[in-house]
Image (cartoon, rainbow, N blue to C red; front, side):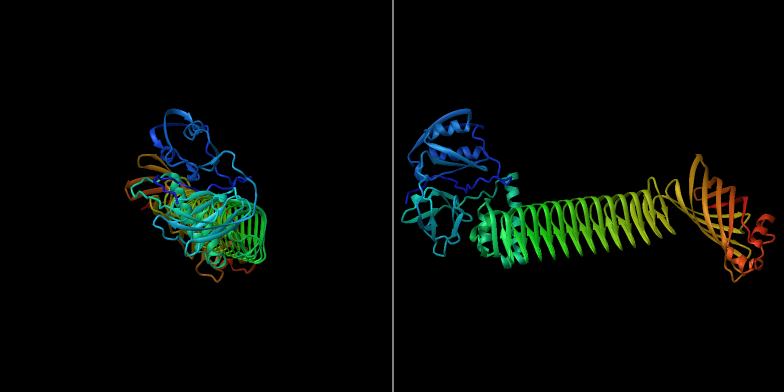
Length: 613
């Protein structure tokens, strides 16, 4: 066993796919600067690694341990520098951010043989759960408790990648492992004070997602732990056109199924793969550790740790950890932990943690934590913790941080910030700032910048609120409560006269003119009720007012003006000959009294004056 005194990183460098899943390659033409004097070659390579975002992998036996190099170059091409350091004896293969160094002219003749060995650490202790992976043949074994392994191969010239968690990877050539080979792995040194780069932070996030993926009950119980373990440690994608699987542990692909991307996958009960670039069908479940490009159909569930570009359809639920560009459809529920561009449709619930550009539709409940641009429809409730730009519809209840568009619910609509558009419910609406229209029995807003509330109770915290008591030609007293924005407001009206009362609703507009002087225009629709007759409903009065207001004090204003009135009687009273049961004589002009008594339609100009508090 050769002694190794230098710090060398050996990493897995794997298959080049003809798909978009391939990693970005190191450019051998990139410029580097290097200045070393009489330094060992492995140490020189390590210095280059530290100054750049790539790594070298090679067989240490191919570089004599006593070879030294001196080089002082600035802005030299990477390939040119390597040729000078390695005396032009090596060829280079780039995969991802790794560079494989291999001697030129390696014999690639094929022969069947068995590789047997033992994996140990630097203290001579066996390492169980180490992975021995033949890159070209896509075969792998995991060492036993005593560190031993046995791997049958066809080509002796291919690379063997050996790895173990918390140890540095190493790369060997299969034909050098003749007899029983003892392979030593060295622990990785971890600097607790090191600053984590964005690339490393991304890897940590992926590891966290992988852990969540593996904790899902179907994944934990169906997928062999050895396949999940191999997928965690070996970062590669191997294209396999067709996979047939009975269960994740029983099928055409065994231990390495978690490393393979399939064009077509048929899972008789359930299956597991690295990804799909085509179509996958499973009678029970499809479990995918990577991306889906195409279609995925399952009787019970689809679980995907990568992105979905296409259709994801299941009878019970879909669970996706990454972005969806397409449609996610299920009979019961959909769960997505990232952005959606397209549709999320379920019979019961949808839960999404990212943004939605499209539509989220469910029979009962939708929840979303990112922004929605499009449509959100639920039979019972929509719970949106961010902004919705579009339309939010529910049968009972919905909430959003802000709405630009329409928010419509059967019982209650609520936003924690703003509404720019329309907010409608049968009972209760609430927002912080209203720019548009609120319609409901109870409407609440902190302020109205440009809009109107229509309802029985309209409450504006920082808006216009006043109580008005007036006398006019129709009633002894007319009580009005006006509330709304600084200009537009709604009106609740109650009038009391002889043998009659009027209950109405209206809208109004007020405009300051000069200091304490203002004018207002009101339109009020009133239902007229008799108090001395069995025929209570007597008709309706439409009232249009133009008033002039003068403020005596902060909370006391005089108001007076003219009105135009239209009386529309209840024709049923004429049929029952009960119009003469109510008398209005002496309370108003003859034309009004006659219209009321004879149950005839009438129009007249009127007046009013009173005070406003």
